[in-house]
Image (tube, rainbow, N blue to C red):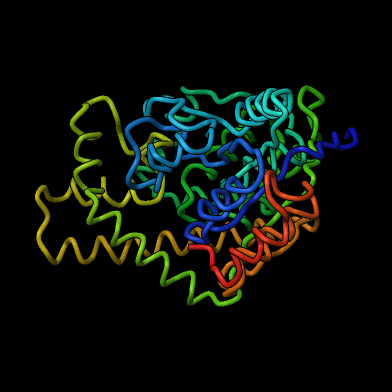
Length: 340
C-alpha cells in the first residue's frame, strides 16, 4: 500500500451520531476559512431532511457544504464514490485558498478516504436480489450463521441483523471465491489513502449523556414531521425498504411503522420511539467502535463543559490564528461552551 498523501489543509472531524459534530463544524467555520465536506451516507439523499438532521438552508448558506443532496433516494452511493468525490473536492477547496473540513459519522467513508480502498468487485444486482430473497425466507440471522462458516472474521464484527453488510459479504464471497476479510488486506492504487492534518474524534466520556441527546433529537425530529417525511417517500411508489436510503436508521423504523398501520395508534407510536432510539444507540456504539480502532485520532470529550474552546485550541494549532482577530480573544469568547 502506498504511503498516505499528506494534506495539511484538510481536517477530519468524526464522532457518533448526536455528539455535536455540526455545532463543532460551525464553530470552526466562524473563525477560519473552511468549506465543509459531509462524510455522511444519509445526507447525500434529497428529500431526507428531518430524519438525517440535515444542516438547515441557513447553515448551508453561511458555510459552503458539499456532498449533501447529491443523490435521489432510489440511487446508491458507495464509499468508493465518496472517496473519489471527497479527494476532488479537497483539491478544489484548497485551490480556493480555503481549508477542507471533513465532518460526519459514516466511518466506512472515513476508512475509504483515509486508509485507501479495498480491491472488491462491483455489486451484482441479480446476486444481491437472490441473497435478499433467501433472507426473506430464512431471516438474516440464518444468513449471518452461513457467513460465519465461510468468513468467521467478518461475521464476528457484524450484527446478526446487519442486512446490508451481511449481503455484501456473501456477495463478495460468491463472486470471488474468497472471504471478504481476506480481500481487505489488499488496497486499490486507484485512490490511495489521504492523511489530513488531524482526525479529531468527538467521543463523550459519559454514555448516558449521548443517550439523552439521542432521545432528545429523536423527539425533535418527530415533532418536526419525521413520519410525514417518510409518508411522502412511501407515496412516491418507487422506493422500498431494501434500498440503502430506506435502511438508514430512523427511516427504516418509520417505514416499518407505516407499513403496519397508517395512521398508527398512540401505542404503536410509543413502540416506534423506543425502537428508533434503541437503533440509534446501537449505531452510535458501532461508530465509537470504529473510531477507537483509528489510533491516529485526537480525542476530544464532546460532553465536557469546555468542549468548544478545546476544539478551537486544537484547530488553532493546526491552522494558525483565526482569521481577522487574535486567537486568544476569539477563544476566550467561546470559553465554557459545550458542543450543542
